Image (cartoon, rainbow, N blue to C red; front, side, top):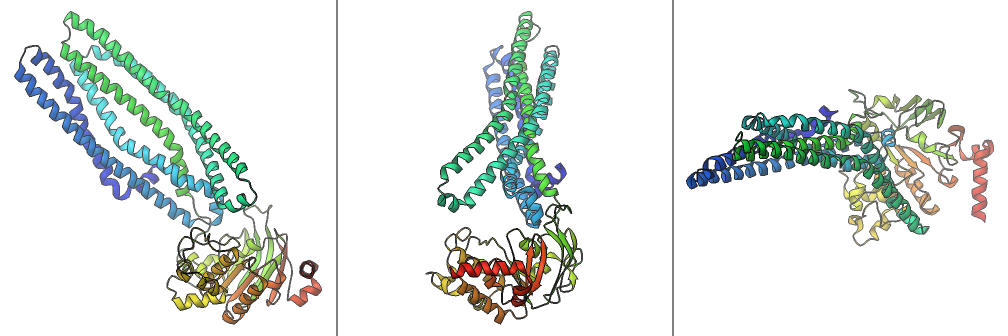
Length: 575
């Protein structure tokens, strides 16, 4: 885990290495200052030598300035290295998420991935910055100050034999008990982010149903859950500082007591005792910083594990090595296909599907809610892989194509239409980044989108805002259809993508498809029979199985489900 994470320090290794180097200079200056102080007291002040005191005082000031200089450089270098590390870590995680299949994203959830990319990376960033400073500074300071203290008075140094075990035991107990508490706290963060995401995505529904107070109450409960988990974790960690200070001050009192008696007896000079107390402070502060470093490690270790889980996750859908072929045509074949979102053959959403679709054929798919229409077509571009059986495109198993090649030839307008921040033109060029203005206009005319686009003052340069907030549901669907058409694919899949447009517009879109996409295999999933009745064949699905296949006329005679749907829709239209 640590090798994987810290390999992303990348171009910031230089700063990460130089920071501890400069810290050595800072520590050496700090450790030498008490020695100079002892000389000033024992040799200068005691002898009344003003010149010696002045000379050593100037030396002490210079050493303090050098210590400050080295400390400032170390601080800057560690901050640059830590922020660069966090940047690289976030970029690596985001690239990894882009390679995830739908199944991988389902496993983590979008809210959890958001927390891992933000809160968890920030925790690791802070720990890394503290590590490259304190993990070097504290041990060097501890060793140097201990050597100087023993050098000053070995007998008085025996006090450390009592204080250090107490500190070590306290840190061990805190570290052992705090880690699971912070794991629980981060889980609460995931749940809170999930509430935020859900509320912001569905803000129109919240307002339409006047549920603001209900959502506020739910969010407050979620944030309070985070607070309780954080307090539960932190109340153990905050015990570290009082324990450290108690031991530190107790040690100083013991040093002053025993050292004072030794000074009265003449076994130690005043300057030596003064410098010894300063070394004791440095030793205990180093121990305190090391204990805080351990605590920070505990806090960040849970975040490290969560980040590593993302980086180590293997995408469930991968491109085969060396795949170079392209689909020869838009033919599709399902052979004994079964599928479960959990990979469980006992919990199938598609059960033993056999279906052959000719290249250039228009296929309609109709069925009730939960009949797995969307699940079926998502197997074609390998958004998911089959649990059993084979899906073939252009005469070859879809798993034999590289994902880029396959998905370039399959355009899909999903049930949930998504537009991105930017202009209409920029969104349309997701289909083809090199598309000319003329090609964009032709695609929009085919999708019946050109007229409403030109109704905007800025036309194709209209800024859509985040998620296309300033266009209607039907307009959004037509823009997504135009974006798919720009790919010029061999296969186009419309997953209930005209549900928000009127029947006249729906008819115009289907007419344009027949004229402009005669050689393109078209699959139309719809709730309205009018949207699929002129298809070459219509597939009727129920409970994850294909119950009937045929033309509109054939199904009206042979399919009870199709006839019932048709009659209910005709009755609704008549009424």
